[in-house]
Length: 394
Ligand SMILES: *Cc1c(COP(=O)(O)O)cnc(C)c1O
Image (cartoon, rainbow, N blue to C red; front, top):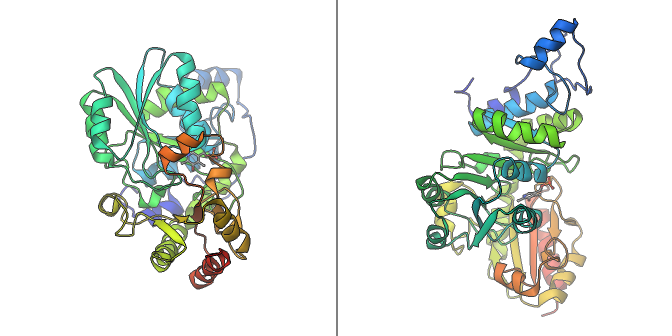
């Protein structure tokens, strides 16, 4: 099974069939499990076998199917599924850190990730140094002999900078630090995060894995030692486990993940290439445009530009709002990775909490629009984007 190609793993890995031989994965919508005897209960609390469960916060057969499927795809020994992407990010970091530890993190992070690193961990006396993730020298300077972990998003939100993961991982490993990556934008399909040196790979399954905007979920992938000895005890006792129903939605999402993200990425590249240079646009940010500062890294590391692009309208907020309000197919929302195309104005929504200086530092201008490309016909999407651009006054 480990020599299956990704698309086969996405459909079959981790499947557990009951005595009924169901074709589709069963939803074990149960929080508890009964024991044959008091002795069996005692034995299971001492050590549970692979098909033995105790309580859904600890594990559940449907959740286990999802964990085994994503671990097979990532090529990691194990995985722990969480209630959301943020439960996964928090679980990966908080389970392994203690007061006095030092962490180095890239600064361009999803807002809630930044909150965990900047506001929560520091409250427990973890020291966090933030760097410009695209500057390898900054990582080299910030990583110290006592650094315990580095944290980064392989492709940043919303400016789509691509971090040179192999270089950062080598620097971290030289001092024995754990490399924890949030790989949402790269997706489990375009990612080589484990092969490039990531020790722990975290996903918000809410995004491409569900891919149809239904459920929250997340997952932490890593070695069996890290998942079962470090992450699981923290998560199962603090309540961050995934619900069996949501695990089932994610399992079914995985079956079509490869087909969906490749189609979305092809449309994203087509749209980015078509609108680059438009007179109302300052910049089009997409890792697979040759003009992108990390174009070469994106090619080596992902083999794709991903499903999201960002456009910077020269006319600032007024232009961005005129563009958004003229769209007829693309919806205004803040999710990404969905079958439905979604446009977001980060400065006034997802990144509103940041100060003007912080936004400027991250390149989040008033004219920036993030565009998560969906599964609609790419010509229709392009026409919609053109309609948006036409609505912007010159
Ligand atoms: C959405 C997202 C998260 C958080 O995931 P939730 O499932 O919403 O908790 C974390 N990191 C990145 C990069 C994201 O895009």
